[in-house]
Image (tube, rainbow, N blue to C red; front, side, top):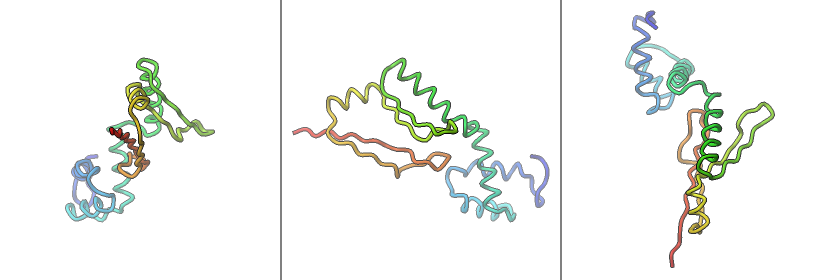
Length: 139
C-alpha cells in the first residue's frame, strides 16, 4: 500500500477510511475522502476498502456465522439455555435464536410482555440486530 495514487499515498487514504468507516455512510465517506485528499474515488471503491478493513479486523464474513453457532452451542452445553438455528440448502445461516439460561428463568417467572425491535442496529452485512425487551407488570 505504499504506491502513489493521484499524488498521495494510499496508506493515508486507508487510515482515513479506517478512522471513519463506522461513523459515516459510504456516500459521505467517499465525499470526505475525495474532499480531503483531492481525489475522485467512486463509492464502490471506498466500499471495497471498507470491506477489506472489516475483514482484516473481524475475519472473513463467512466465518462469523460458524463462530457464532459454535459459541452459542458451547454456551448452551455449559450453562443451559436455548439455541435454535435455520440453515439453507447451501449450509448458510438464515436465522437463529439464542436465549441464555438466566433469561429463560426470568421469562418463566416474571415476563408479561415481550417487545421485539429489529430497527435499532445492523451488523456489517446490513442484517438487523434484534433487541428483545421483556416488561414485567407489578400490580
